[in-house]
Amino acid sequence: MVTRLLDFAYTLSEGSDICASILRVRGLLDVENTAECAENVNKSGEIVDNIGEVCKTRDETSDGAITKNDATIVRYAINVYEMVRRGRYESLKEKYGIDIMDDIDKKWIQKAEEIIPDELYSSGYVKRLSKSLKGTKVPARKLYIADLHFFHDGLCRRMDNRPFKDHYEMNEAMIRIWNENVTDKDEVYILGDFSIAKAQSTNEVLRKLTGKKYLIIGNHDYYLEDKVFDTSLFEWIRPYAEIGDNGRKVVLSHYPILCYNGQYRKKPDGTAITYMLYGHVHNTHDEVLVNKFIQTTRNTEVLSKGLEKPEPIPCNMINCFCMFSNYVPLTLDEWIIVDAERRAKMNVE
Image 1 (cartoon, rainbow, N blue to C red):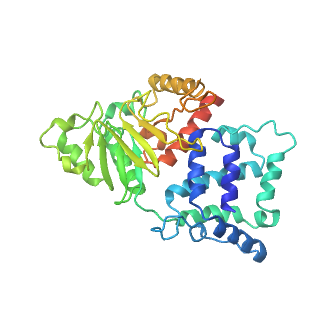
Image 2: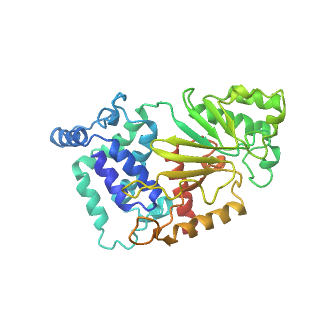
Image 3: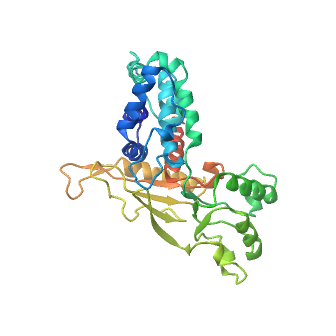
């Protein structure tokens, strides 16, 4: 049942980044176990509560539960399915950029009804399935966030217009939100401009934050030049980095890199391999210009080596600005969804 929901969302979804994430999670699921579960549910009329007991991964080191990272993609598929099933096409377009407004004969609703029969749907299967994702296993995750700007009082009044009275209130809120969403096992990659305070104050904030922290140097991280700063509070400090994340290459830089290393690399099935995560531009006119470049690049076709015909240029750049995620460090898959939702709203507007 879960794999069918993923397949349904994949068919409707636009954008190689979301499709790549769906395919990745789809490949992790044990089709036989999922099919057997769906058959048992249909025969007995009972609903399985824990998707983690059903969707086994192919990784022999796993205990069988899907991760919170994977659950994000499954939840996306459920949301898409629910919007189609209920005929909420306008919400589907506004939230995810999926436009099926011309579906006069309601063929997509019919397809959705074929996936989950009326009797199973009306009994609350989808709601129970979504609820079960809350109990998924949370292993060590790679999380990303940019431009927190601890102690930057001015951002509450200009440029960002953050919803805080002053930096004291902002610091307290961002520390609380961070610790509510990051475990001690998580790896958090901070894409620059962590703090504008002096070394000692920055030390105090870092000691309060959970997780293993990695810093990509930003133009406001002056505390690094102070001998009082405790560099051991970061696992490493670099101006630029390239790391692996669930079989994908992630390029990390404080500044957006318009032509980044590995940009054209794809898997044999055409899905993206490389993502460029950046910060620095916040949500300013510079970000508007970067977005125009991304859209232009994605709309440009070139004949690359080994291809028989021109194909669109891959451009998987994501601004991990903290306000886009409500100050929560997110996984790559979560950022992919946040970015797609933001771009869908740009197109609607």
